[in-house]
Image 1 (cartoon, rainbow, N blue to C red):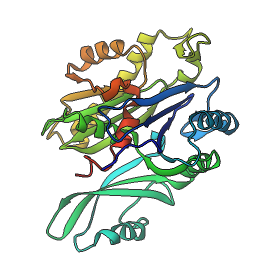
Image 2: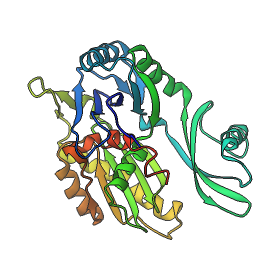
Image 3: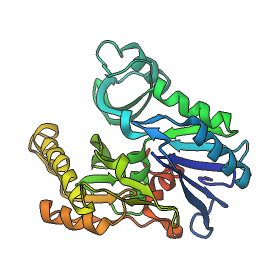
Image 4: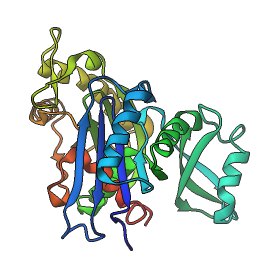
Length: 321
């Protein structure tokens, strides 16, 4: 199976960056990746929506021309802000090609979502006597369409849109880090947001996205390094990190007492994301929660902030099994 090829582009848009990854061969072990990150002068994404289409289009056009990507297939990561995930039960007799129709038919009845006209996907978790249990993923179509149209307009061929924590977990499975009964808290600690997802028995159980206050005005571009640096007169970076431990602690407690009804608890942490100075985060996580922290290493010396793009290329290889 060719998971990667030179004609497929993987892209992640964040608040002020365009992150990309391509492979020059289907052999990800022997061949080097072409990857990079462009840091823009102002916000292009806010609250999961495109707010500066002109700047974003201009930079993408230049990148595509430079890389000769015109007409190439594209897979991209959707913003975490609007992802809905839940478990549902469906009749066992449904055939595979009937499941989506059943979900759509019952969305205003037994299956309720917080928005209309969603894009939906699902995985069968467990087959029962009369009912099958599925995990359902939904995303509002009005939030996704502008991204798809943007990529079409700049000459790419959108082929797959995926969720960051699913893509990262594929990379985690590929690295053979998962243990059978762990309750793994994956923390995607980024400069502008925090996404927390628990996986148990290799299945996502619960997830929450948190927008980080003060981040937009505090991260400023260094014109020499072309990177975002913390520049705040209100908070030190360590104090800013400490503030985010409160929603993490609440998340951990909610998972234990409400999601699994005190029949399990988080016992491992996987720390990822594009936040710099991760040692500050690790030290504070260890002090507050005293849980082992796992680290994901990507092939070809890829930086961890490219983990979701690498996992996007693994789509269909491990998670679906």
